[in-house]
Amino acid sequence: MPEKITSKVKFPIGIKLVTIITVLLLLSLGAITFLVSYMVTRDVQITAEENNFSVNRQSASETERTLSSIRSAVFVLLETIRNIADTAWPEAEDLIGRDTDSFFSRNEQVAAIIVPGLLELVNEGYFRSNELDSELPHQFLDQQADALRRCAAGETMLLNAAPFFQSAALVMLCPFKRGENAYAAAIFFSSDSLNDNYGQGVNSSFLINDTGDVLIHPDYELVRAGVNLADHPFVEILRDSTETRLQTLYTDKDGKRYFGAFQKLMIGSAALVTIVEYDKIFEGIVTTTRRNIYLTGVVLFASIILVWLFSKTISGPLKVLTAAAGEIEAGRFDLELMPGTRDEIGVLTASFGRMGSALGIFGRFTNRDIAIRAMRGQIHPGGEPKNATILFSDIRNFTSISEKFSAHLGGAASDKLVRWLNEYLTRMVGCVEKTGGVVDKFIGDAVMAHWGTAYTAGSPEHDALNCVRSALLMRAALCELNKKREPGDAANPVIKIGCGINSGMVTAGQIGSTERMEYTVIGDAVNLASRTEALNKPLGTDILITENTWNLVGRYLITEEMPPVTVKGKEKSIRLFAVINLKTKKGTQPKPHTLDEVRRFLGIDPPDMYKVKLHAEEKKYKIDSDS
Image (cartoon, rainbow, N blue to C red; front, top):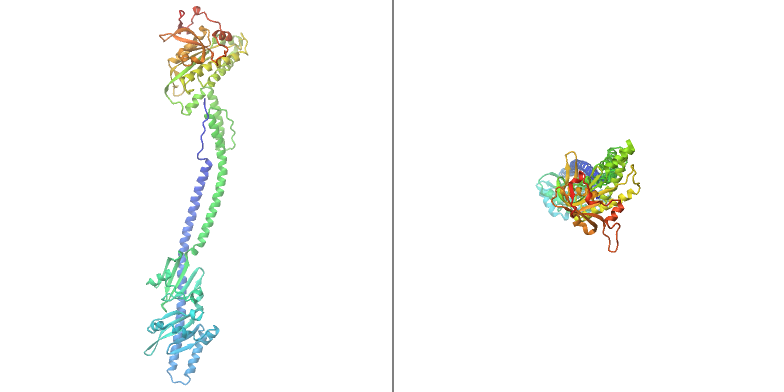
């Protein structure tokens, strides 16, 4: 019997839609985010480099201008003092004092000017206002003997005096000549005026001398502590470079990246360094990118929810259609499908319902089980040898019954006859299908069916036994049907049938034309089953089986052997057995259990074998009366 075939959906349409939308959104938004971030990053990097270089250049120019201004002013003062000292004026000392006071009043950041062994000028106001000891410059120079020698030899130097002064103070050592003698002029001055230019936003600038000592730094504690940055990665790049100005990307010892720019000053062998942290430059971009990612996540989540809800409007009806397809595949065509939408899915649902109805109607005009198995590929084109059991059944005296219908019912005879016949055939087909048989065809009032062909019970023996059971069910169903009928009622006559059963090898397959074909069986075993059915009337039986079938299932049956018969096309006579009933357990007697009981039960007159007259159809055989 047909079974329901179920298929598991591996990739639901909702998952597919969600996957597609997710991929598209990730690709589009991801690409946009990447391109925007990439392009903005490049623009920001270029701008940051230009800005860093610009800050470095401006700070260096300002520092160089300030240092040059201080040095020039000091040297003008020294030259003035020398010129006054070279005169013999009595008031020379007073003039020098006034010029010195005037200089310090105009240059308050200068703390002292000392030329060891020659001159010492101290800005007392500077030391008083900063509460410093005026001897600090001497103490500082006492520790700079080597620097003083280098300076006297012609080298201008910048030194950090903040560790001594405990305030922002620099010393500029400048070569100074008087006559043939070379001296080192030490100019002590405050760097406060320069500090404001060394910390602009994210950029940080600091000034170092040729030995790496920090002279000016936004972090004053580094200056006061006298920190040396000779081992700083960028300072190492600066000291190894022959360039006067340069910018590059470097990584410090902690793994942080920086853009670094330097410019070497023309005064004091110093260099001004400006750096900016790489991550701080792109901090805004990273924040924007992170926000874009969050936005992408929100959009993606909302899209998934919307797509999932939308997919339900598709997958829901499709699940109904899938279930309906399973019902059709299992051979159940009566479907109740109501379109839930007015889109293509709704149209498809309505069409599917009409298709089910059409298949249901079509199934009545063909063998539905065979069509379903062929659709599943369980029946292949072409013929196959099968060990089958074939049954033919026929209504006794159907010709005369149909003539009586016409005589008594007139114009309504055809409709009444068809209804009467369909009621009978419905019961007979039910008996065949209940036992796993295949109704091959209807030949007028005759039914042809077979077992062990399209599907089997497992062995020829079981198939043959199912066929005999089907014939016995037909007997019982017909008796139940005849209880509603009265003998002699021409409008609803009693039905008597004969069944012929034979087993053997047949050829089973789809036979017909390209336009129409049917699954049937052909072969000598089929012909013998048909001729066996015709023998029921002369032999006074309702179910006859051949020796072939009896050899398979005789031990399960109560039978009575009939006279041997010679059938047209057979050289030897065949043995036939009338089926009375199935055997039951020992100690019980089924009813009927003899052929006479069957005849009495069905109203069949015992035949006189010697007086049997064969009509044309029955001349296919002869009865051996001598046996």
